[in-house]
Length: 156
Image 1 (cartoon, rainbow, N blue to C red):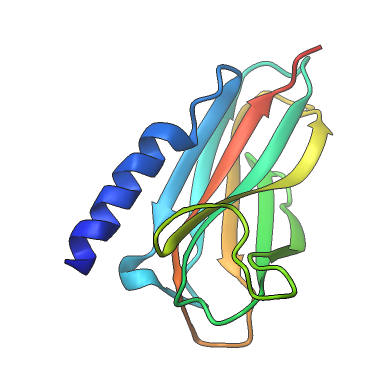
Image 2 (image 1 turned 180 degrees about the horizontal axis):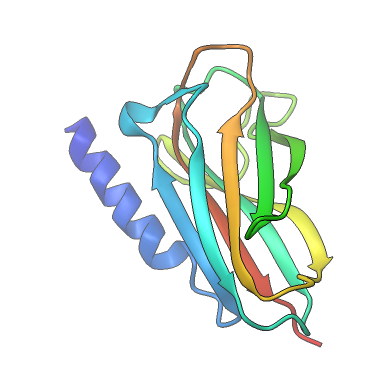
């Protein structure tokens, strides 16, 4: 029964999670059994053709109510072709100070969209590689079912 609920939640989220007209890229990577190993790096490749507009970069996290912490530390990197990668450490809060889950949810699953950077300009066209890994102190992190990346073209 739990697996049916997981599949239904993922399908519903995929249908509604990335539906903005100005969305250039929106993808999730499923974390098997909602157990994210610290060495498991999620990779997203995005083709940026237009360098004129500004973009918004969002980090997408889907957690279950089995996640034991209020926050989640992430290692996020971005690179283009053979350029050195930019690496950042990001702290996102999945619950408030009272333990209430943030984001939208169905039963025990919660979708969160965190603004990473706003008004970003990509200075060269090409294939950009983005990576996300968890930066928590634990080998295995239970309760994170999916992580993703969304890039939106900003309206002028």
